[in-house]
Length: 239
Image (cartoon, rainbow, N blue to C red; front, side, top):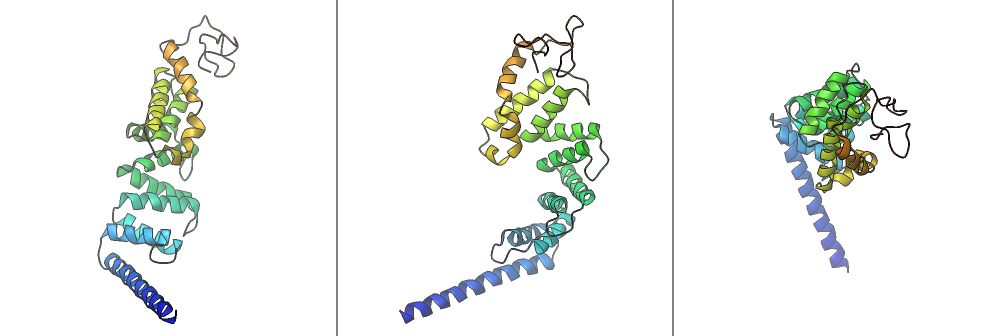
């Protein structure tokens, strides 16, 4: 029994020493070069507590170093840190800055987050035209949340000329992408916002070409003049 305990202790020390050596090697590589990948990997280890204790301040530090050296994923993570106040003080303007940097460098999720910043005026003055532009960019690159938000904007008609085919297209794309994407369960906006859209799609397929007509009464919900619903004459077929 004593021999077993001694062996286990020695093994544990060897593992501990090995892990620390690996972490030191990562730190040396990150500190002594402009290797943004090494910096990013080191940040991930501090964030996840891999081979070391979890340390959000150090994770933030290395995400920042990696972002400054051009790593898109690090830019996105850094923006999230600033937005949530993780490992640093909350700063929505800096969050916007790094979402913009990441989006301009092709990070698809950052495009969606940047759209939200413009849409809600978070860290930047509200600008719905720019919000639509970045929602469109994200949606065309497969971001389901952006597809859904874009469909809502076109359906709402308050920030852009209402064209019925557009909300139909983006709802449909979002639903089809969600059905074919195994990671959809992790995207909270999807099932919260798209769960009731399937029936809407069926309705829109039937009446998608129909635009406003003066002969119809104004819809109680959206205030557009379209064919009324059979069940409720005060609302249109879309609402």
